[in-house]
Amino acid sequence: MRDFEKISFKQFSKDVKDDKELYRNYKLPSRNSNKAAGYDFYLIEDIEMKPGDIVKISTGIKAHFEEDEVLMIFVRSSTGFKYNIRLVNQVGIIDADYYNNRDNEGHIFIKLQNEGDKTVSFKKGDHLAQGVFLKYLLTDSDNNNNVERRSSY
Image 1 (cartoon, helix red, strand yellow):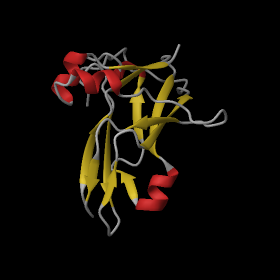
Image 2 (cartoon, one colour):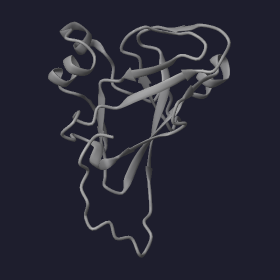
Image 3 (tube, one colour):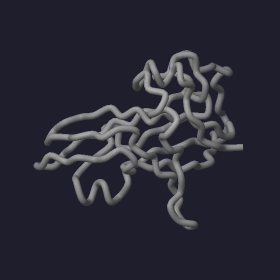
Image 4 (cartoon, one colour):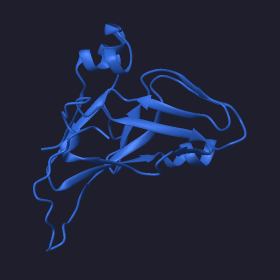
């Protein structure tokens, strides 16, 4: 089973702010059409990005899914085309064992950079990134010795 859920209010207060109204009202990722592959992540708060700025965005979201799946995070095509905004790591990789890790409950962060020459502003509720769930394969000789995740990064 795969799904998105909010991080706890305790984690939200630590990572974002101690604001119950904000916590109650932000949206979970969703697909905006019946043939969309990606689930849009919505901004919790307004952001402004000057040229060259790098902004770490708290989504307030964690995701659980099958062990042989990965959640890949991409900047939405329109965000890159219109504003020259890029993910700092190009593609975010969220592994199944990131969910409920002891450091941050699996809180998904998105880090964006404004590579354009203009200041851009985005409003709470705008969607700048999207997540796509994919199955992956292992090599026949894979042997990770059942190493478990120790930290969030």
